[in-house]
Length: 167
Image (cartoon, rainbow, N blue to C red; front, side, top):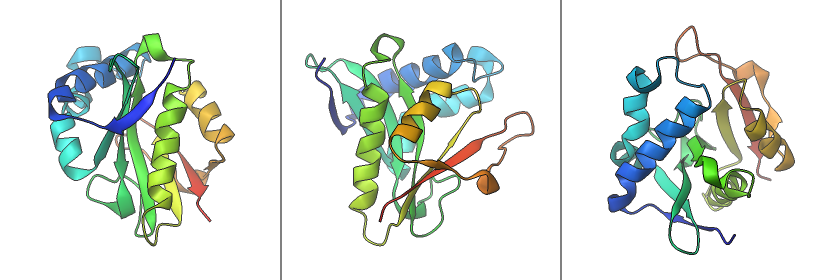
């Protein structure tokens, strides 16, 4: 399957929001499913795109396969990035597109964007402990665990952190 990564189009906001929310629910990452307060945040791609760079993966028929938010240089949408770091968030891949390199292609795009950002020395991310497939992708691409930066947005949600040194 050929995968193209490009910036999202406004007419795709709703579809990516639903895809992202569904991926988190199916992955057991939202305690209250559709009723979880974070579901609304995941669906709000327009706000994400206003504060970060949202990229999508599409196939040859322009079918949406997944997406990610790239935050250059510790921008307003960052959770953990500090100046000199870029971050990516809300990586999600449609269930039908998993295992085909879609997530890896999105992460590689974020790494390329980070390398192209003047003064950026590292790309960071947060992930839930149970996202084993994602952890394997990060390791394959050279990310290393940074346990000293692990954090929790709310007490019941521990997040692991990873970093990729760019130079």
